[in-house]
Image (cartoon, rainbow, N blue to C red; front, side, top):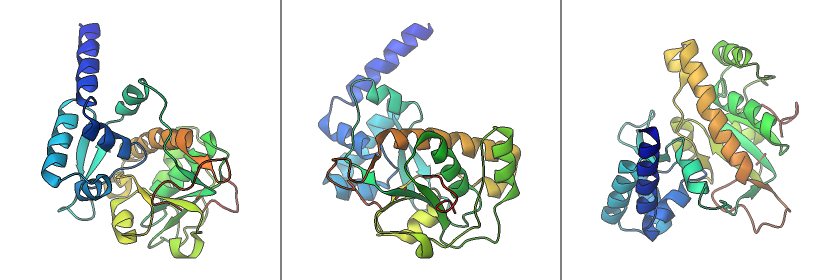
Length: 248
């Protein structure tokens, strides 16, 4: 039965991706999440046709919609966690994306961005940092405890303001909706990741770490260092290696 379901799912995925418009939507979501309006503008697809494409992709288990934690009127479209493997099985994915450093950003720079930076240091030699739009006084103890539970090296720096540490060649990756929406038109990749501090439980922090681990690993497999022969940043981007001086 599991084999039959696997075949059915693969068939549904191939059918969904057989349309160039839907394939373009999926390609646009390989690096980060996006609001439907943003996707429509970026891809030049009418909003009604885009809604149809998203519905088909959602029915096939490739994407889902997430309601923004910061603005409940806003939603994001994101790839399902296992969709990336299903998509890349058909061939390598090579978005034209490069940076000198990755800078993970959340509102307080006390949990999600700090965890993401630590995870990045485990799977990439590209420099990394973290910052906040409204930095806290200290890193949240729940983030420290989660890293300890998972045996992850974690040397968080003092929370810092993104306006003071961002550089022109950084790839900014916002890992909370409030920060992503506050940065607005500033070039960045957005990941809609739930805030574990709101719940405050070990399970919430563990879930956040797990979600970020998958996303960080995928980005690390795609992102190229500046000067590697790629043509440029490839999007709304700005930079990234976990070293004491860079990790905020």
